[in-house]
Image 1 (spheres, rainbow, N blue to C red):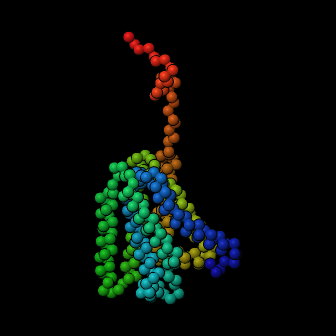
Image 2: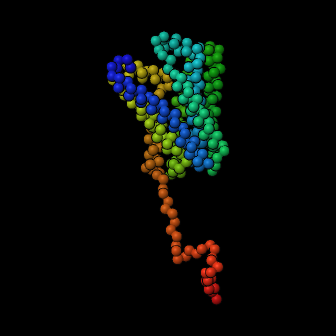
Image 3: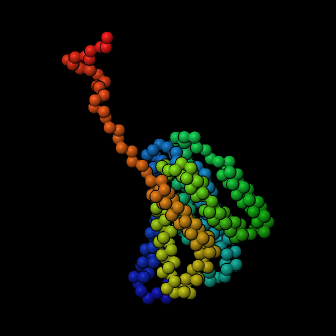
Length: 278
């Protein structure tokens, strides 16, 4: 960003970054609040939550390892050069911790609130078990040679994979129910805002082509963030289409009372009783 001579451009760039960070961080709360108010999780797909927890847990392992481990940082510098900045900051670690915590709270709500007849699918359970089994095998492979950078890249790949598949169960569930009731659209709107403002940052970087290309490479090594955002924004648009166009909330009008047939539940003592049919 040093090639920019315009302070307003730099301020705008930083503003977009903070909006994206704030939007993604707050996006977890609408669903938690909706579940709390309804005392129900009916309409929220449980597979989506389980896969999302796997995604953010993997992302936390990647971020925390690269930020706190001197061994991992040393291997990163050896691979990419001394001039390369470590692509994880404190806010990345904080975001991951926050995401895991809020997703775990949502999972806890699934345990304590009304679930209807919804269950976690066997496919989702098998997928999560397979993912962590692969992670365990990779750990055993990396242990003798201390290939920690390679190991955390596996966790980075896991979180990208989870991003691709985690939304699918919720999309299918909305389609089957022909409704998005119980699934918070606030989560989607905030996630979409974060994705759009992040893209706006990249568009501003294109003012300096060399900086833009360098940033793209840096982001690719960080967590393939461009692909990750493309997938997220695509599903955000799909959810918005389902919520606002395909399955909008139907406002049911209150039933009209038939005055001719309506009688009080308790008859007044002064009111004469209706004659009995003989």
